[in-house]
Structures are given as structure tokens and as C-alpha cells.
Length: 419
Ligand SMILES: *Cc1c(COP(=O)(O)O)cnc(C)c1O
Image (cartoon, rainbow, N blue to C red; front, side, top):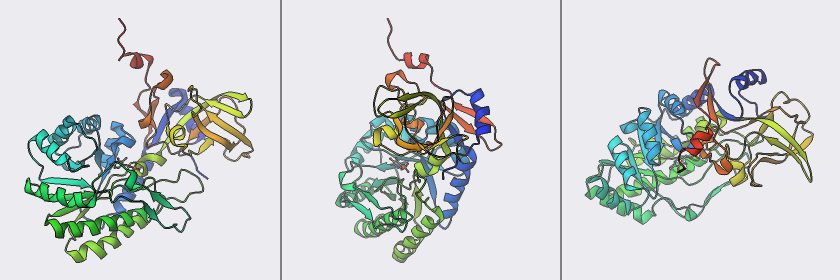
């Protein structure tokens, strides 16, 4: 059973001050999880997590993660600007983008970010844009084909399609790129790959690491470059469904360590630093979308309309993603009603749940939609004139802090030309 990180009583106090809907974040959960990640990779002295800003681009969240020793992974101009304003600089910033505009490379270089090139043509594009090739540089690898992990012991299979993904360079391009970058003055090299998303398996990172470590050993032999870091990127998932097991980050860290000791250390590459760019794993479970039941509708199906909509959380609408729902105060009640839980958008996909068994919902009930801390508010949009909600931090001492106000009609109108 998934348990909210806030009680009904506390939530009732919070909604007196902050009207629904809003995203609520659990500072304690964020900090404890970040510490567990760092602990899992403590065997690697150079380890660093670069939080994928796109997952939860809120300055206060970034500052909490910075206090826990994390850097940031940016992929756009505004993400770089936000990170800069939060105090991240130099070695704390990874820039992993694709189809990159020149101005973004310029700002990344100005911040001293580690630039992770998505394509071989970006070498000359970067050099022409900023006038030089940074001493430390990374290239994104795409091995093509399909990536599968055999059925894990928990029964969940990991499968993804790198061959259909627009990201990264082929294996021959990786060797060409390293050779060219070395000629242009690069001294420290990194390899990055992202082969599967939201994996629920302790085997994903170790399997990816083994591929990248082996590739690193080969590339070092072929090109003679000094590879100093390997970036496992994102993709470690969270159990959105209550029956799914959670990843064990300590086991994942040990799995990567085993591959490191088997492949890199014998090749004389025991000084390589491991980086990660986790987004979902760092934040998803520590965010709730809090919403209230507004309407009941009984037609061909049973509908409960809430005051949040896909503009606040898009994943169910665009991927049919499952997000668990707790009807606050009715955790123990029989789940004997089948509902579609909908928002107000004029789009039939605007449903947080379809045919979901829930306790009987009364108008005014508070609902917690789970695991919205990553790719939740961040993916918000304004279709139908629905505005993005507030973000609230539940702090370590139990008090709340508004960390982003809700948009107002004035915000929505501000970009239009009226006369
Ligand atoms: C989205 C993204 C991440 C984070 O992915 P998660 O699945 O949220 O962990 C990391 N790196 C890059 C380059 C990304 O695009």
C-alpha cells in the first residue's frame, strides 16, 4: 500500500492556507534519498549526482539537493540560468542536451559546465560558437538496437529502443569524436549513455555500466585519450504502482562497483569517476499532487471530477501512466467503487485514473495523487487557459513554505498583445 507522506489532519491545515490544487514536496524524503544515493556510491571517490533539472525545476528544490552534495544536469538555456542563479557553477553543472542552439553552448561554457556532446557535428559547432574546445568534454553514446534485461527476479522486464532514439553517437562516431576532440585540445574525456527509462530493476545501472566501462577501455586503446568520468545518466525508476518493488539503491551501487572492479580496474582505469543524472529517482516519490473532488457524474461510467487537471500532471494523459491515488482519510475503507478521476480540460485523455477501484468519494474529499515530484509540475502547460498550480515544500520541521505561487490570469495574459 502506498502511504502519503502527509496526514489528513496536516493536509487539512495546509489547504486552509493554500487552496488546491498544488504540488507538495517532502523535504525529509528528498534529503534522505539523496544521502542514500551518495552512500551507495561512496566507494567511488569522484562520484557525483547531477540532478536532472527538467524533472523538477524549482530553485528551492535545487538548493536542497545542492546542500546534499548534488550538482545539476541542464539541457536548456533557462535550466542553465536557473542553476546559475541557485549558485551552481563549474564542476557542479553538466550540460546534456541535443539539437543544441549556439547560445546554450555559450552559457554552458561560460559557467564552466561539463559539456556532453550529443552528435559528432557538434564538435565543430561548439568550436565555432565558443572559439575553443573545453579541456574536459563528454560524448553521448548510443549503441543502437534494443536494450533488454532478462526478467528480473521481481518479474519486471526492462526493455527500450536505443536504435529508435534520436540521442547520441554510434560506436564508430565515438572513436572519431574522441580523436578529433583530442586534436582540438581536449584532455579529459567522459562517456554518457541513457538506454532505458524508469527502470524497476537493480540490474539496469550495472548492465549499462558494464557496456560503458567496456566501451571506455576500447576507446582508450583506439584513441589514446584519458577517460576520467563515465556518466550513467538517468533512468533508475520508481514504483508508481503499489505492487511494484522499489529499486534498492545500495544494491545498484554495489552492482556498478562489481562491474567497475571487473572491467575498469584491470585495464588500469581505476581512477574513473562515476556520474549520474537522476531525475525521477531523486524526486518523484517525494511529491504529491493535492486536489479536491468537485463533482460526481453518472452517465455511461462513474466520474469524479477534481480541481486538478492534465495541465498540472500530464503523464496519465500523454503516456497513460499510472499514478496511485489516496482518498485522504479513507485509506482503510473498502475500495468498492470504480471511478474515472478526471480534470476539466476539453480533452478526453484528461483522466488521472480510468476504471480505478477507490473508496466512495464525496464532494470535498481531498485526494493525493502520488509520485508527482518529478516530471509533474515541470510538464505543466496552459491549454484551455488552465493555469499551473503552486508548489509547496513540507519542510524538515513540519512547517510549509510556498516555493512557487500559482499562476494568475495576469500571468497568462501577460505575453499577449492586446491593442
Ligand atoms: C531526462 C534526462 C535525465 C533524467 O532522467 P530520469 O528518468 O528522470 O532519471 C537524465 N539525463 C538526461 C540527458 C535526460 O534527458
